[in-house]
Amino acid sequence: MSVDDDESTGSTSLVTESVLANIGSVRASYQPVVELGTCQVIGYEALARWPAYPDADVTDVFGTASTRGLLGALDWVCRLAAIEGAVDAGLRAPYRLFVNIEPTSGVSTEHSVRERLRDIRRRAVEGFVVVAELTERSLLADPATLLSVVADARRLGCEIALDDVGADPGSLAMLEFVAPDIIKLDRALVQNTLTAADGRTVAAVSAYIEATGATLLAEGIETPAHLTRARALGATLGQGWMFGRPASLAAEHHSAELSWSPAPRSPREMTSDDIPAVPSDLFEHRAPSIGDKALLLTMARGIEDFARAAGEQLTVQSAFQRSRWFAPNVVERYAALAAKHPFVAAVGAGLSPEPAPGVRGAGLDPSERFAREWTVTAVGAHYFAALIARDIGDTDRPDADRRFEFILTHDRHLVVAAARSLMARVLPLSH
Image 1 (cartoon, one colour):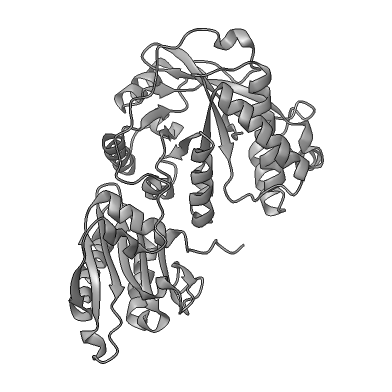
Image 2 (spheres, rainbow, N blue to C red):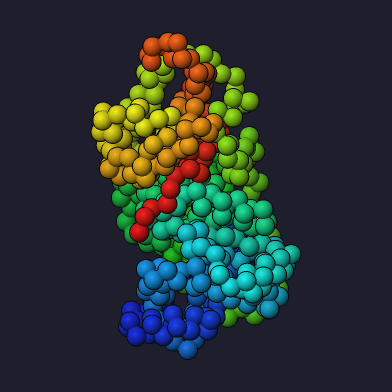
């Protein structure tokens, strides 16, 4: 269930305390999502409400819950209320229900709640389309869990939406990893004068939609001018006070036949759920060459140098085999990349959770297959590059002459798959 900034009222801490002491009293309100060409309602976004505490500031409630370790329980209860309310109101396919999920919130410890949720999810998926909505605040904290949650949601038959795109560069950097079916533009892009940064956001979103066939939804449409802007940006779906404020969901609200359906997604060689165990597993898609370390070092530096000079936001993720290869000059280089880009990571045997300032890290078991990998990836809206290499195991050669099987690729699918393999190993941010 989503936080609704429109309705926040600046609650007192006493009200927030009362809500957190009675989170089970949550009820869902539903804001319509419309097809902009016809203004026909095609679904609803569920929003958290506590009728007993009408002055509750939802943003403050969720923020306080997060700092106290209560976000998991709050998230589950809100999600239950959202889906159960739609089930009780008789919502049916092809209508969609947008439900916020917090990938980093953890799993409820209450067995009965988990079992109840499974039953309601099953009933929901049978009755209507559930759209699992990820917010930008959840994307970078624990990327390995994020990938797992997205895969689980898809297996349950859910679609994936990425919320608040344009509010934070991190959301753009994670587009390829979340692989959303629906992109929700932040209301600022619809309501405010566009900046140069906004222009880069629009270009990145346009590139993703062109490549994948995803659907664009504009938030915050309150006036005809906002509607004109949303359509000009390429949005085909929208929501905002112009089309309706959050309210209870009644059966007559979704009784009409729908003429809208999402455009077919472009075929992908690999889906968002494909996460290779190690990057070199991708050699089955592209036969590798053989090269020595000196050659590969030049190729790796080329990708890193491009990332250092790039005008767009990238994720840069690399595997270094052993921590000794993450030498002081590499530390300096990756710290500079982390200062420029929203997500930079390095894994290798002996690496710490932050091997350079701002760089996300993870140690590897020296005996596992991943410790043989040398991989450098860069993923953006327009730039995709990866050096994927596997140590042959030369022990009788000088270090600079050690040989690797490798591919150097700019293929979107191969690059993203390799980067997913690395991302799945990155440790969550410590709090």
